Length: 366
Ligand code: BGC
Image 1 (cartoon, rainbow, N blue to C red):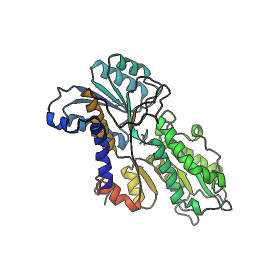
Image 2 (spheres, protein in one colour):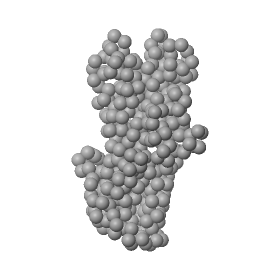
Image 3 (cartoon, rainbow, N blue to C red):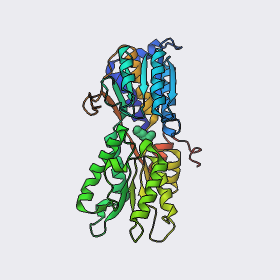
Image 4 (cartoon, protein in one colour):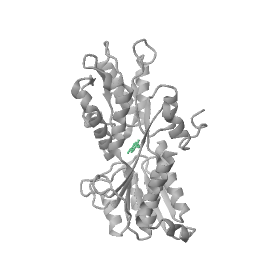
């Protein structure tokens, strides 16, 4: 229940702050005469973006807006063309989850020139003055949760330098600003354990630039895991854990480990790995005792918060309750609405995932 409440509160915060909570309901206009809103999502090949796209589209349509929802196939040229097209179609606002956060500056300038408000969705649009709002989760906190998963799961507080815990690190796409928050949040949590020598990375690969995974490509991460295992784990060294920023990366790393005997050889249990996005396959893996945890960022609350923000702007009101210090895109601090995320382990799948309706029992094969 707590989780649903948080979701509804997030949606209400902007309206409440701008004093329109009840005024809106009273208007009750239908149809699409309220205008067209352009929504651009990075790819249809990941479960979360489909949920995001649907949440934003359905929410806006319920309020009487028409929605043009585009998916960019993780292709930057496609995304720039889609944004150009939406500007030409005369959208009243643009909601954009970018592929490369810095690649849309020309499009954003064109949109700003015709006074289209730009909302950066989940991923911060970088290096442009023409970003009006950012709606996301607190990415640094999400990274902290990724660190906490390892601290708790690997019992790092009980570990000693005499018998260090062995891990390898993975980061997200270098062109996605979220990767910075995830990495920094996790590393800040893990730093004391590295400093005490209770946590070690045999490959020595700890820089974000080195451990990044372009376009969050799980196959690329699997290859890197295979290479790490053959280069640094051929003797008696056993990998105990993996820092993973994304569920498909977690699952591919586990596959790479299984292929060299982890999980089926005495003394080589599967390494402990977290993740992010709470995808169905990972929740199933968690229930099966393989992936240890994930971070749930409820796309329904992000969608609802975005819908409320767009509607507030379309009414000519100024949204309130925003964070005006945390997210600098290289040119300006972008006013942000930052939602909370939740760590999911086997222990709270029922309350955090099933009871909230994020995934149904049927989807999870239960
Ligand atoms: C999002 C994550 C997602 C990743 C890959 C990030 O920007 O915040 O939720 O897992 O992109 O799509």
